[in-house]
Length: 204
Image (tube, rainbow, N blue to C red; front, side, top):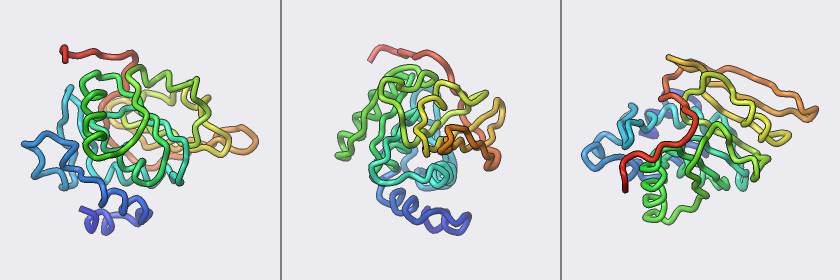
């Protein structure tokens, strides 16, 4: 997987090293474990997906996370992206609206001895009481950039978010020293939609 990613794009080697260290097969259903390291998205619980390795690498590369960066993730999913960020030394706060995934990701982190702060709730709202954040990453497709999230971005901070409806444009938002925002676009992707509120799902 790592060799393929290295051939596809000149990713930050720190990103590839972290992805090499995280056992991706433990974040998917056992039946799909043989496909965990192929470069394609896979289904996970609650009708969601784990992004293909190339997409995870690209978002992480664009985020430019540094050790100890206070990082907010919107859309925990199975927890794989958060695990990569934690392995890179980030302090990760992650929000998930699907109760089943919220609980499952914590179990996987516990089994791997990884630590992050998990929240069950509405990703659109972010975590205003814990703001500002050095880095924000959104792992679902937002129809527009949520103002609540940009307001929680620290000066000098950076957010990576896929923006669009059917297909999304990978977008980087930077808060500059003069407190203005710089927005750049980095290619087309396809994500599950970012939804408001939270979903309890089936009783667990």
